[in-house]
Length: 432
Image 1: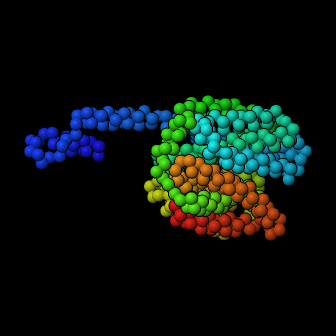
Image 2: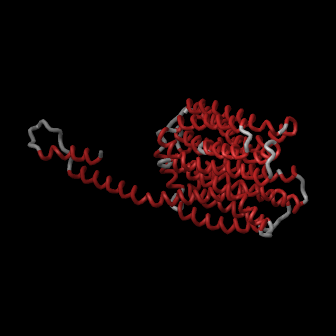
Image 3: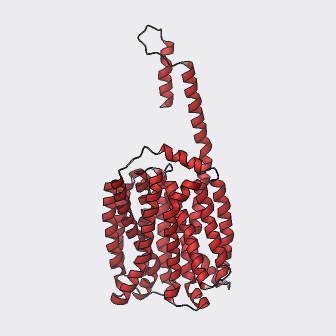
């Protein structure tokens, strides 16, 4: 289109000046416009490799976050023996991590405003590094809780921060899918890596020494990728997006509905992650080795869904695509409730994970697309924080229900939560 427009503008110069033609642009204006176009094109071309490097760096960050978050489940029995604590005391580690996550979600908009994306890329891995170094020393249990809190700070800052960053990128669906797909891959690797450490005769602290080395690499990679993304660059981006204005009540309604949507989604994800192994053992009567596959297969499906369905979502649009994904998930969950064979159950779990995978990044994208950058930072942080509350409460409530009614009702709870997820997605899509 710019070439055709330039041709049309130059055409009157070739015609006789009979007074009926529009005055042609001056040579100074034309050459100035050509210089501007050349500079814009050159800037776009030169920024492509840096954009790709940034996406790869964030994918590496999310991968290590997934490893951190899921490895603790493997270490629980070992930590209980090491510190001579019971289940309820050990569960405080999960609460400490969630508290750290929520804290930085609330602070993230201010951190980005003061330090730019460069600050997120440096502060988040530094917090994770401090947590890993403390844990690698085998400290007293109160220090362990403090370490998981600090790790939660790093996880919350990188998760909500880079999700906000990605939501404003070109092909945001694809970028978000790659990021969260990397987290899902890390969630598969985390239990396997931690189990391998114990299986080869090492203490649990060895795992965190290895992770500290990897986090040093993450710090370097993220720092290089986002070094130019300083506060001045952030303010320039913010000024360019000020034309997106929404009323205060509309913004509050969007954040509220999106928060409930995330509360329901992360609750479903947490139940499958934390309780499906126990369900397969108690209700389907399978051995632990086979039951352990159920969580891994679910996360494999999540990884594939987040990676592959981003292109589908980009083509058909977020609202239509996610509605279809949720409906398909409900149908598969009902089938999981009815099918009793172990191979069929495992296949259904993987397929459920595949269609649930795009939920988190797609919700962030829809929320951020209706808000300017500064408001989107706070909205994404608030919604993510509420979602983490759902991820913490749902497994606890399911455990209490299992003590009273039995574990056999897990599929019923999940179907109910996913129906709630569908309702609030439809409301969210309508409001946006």
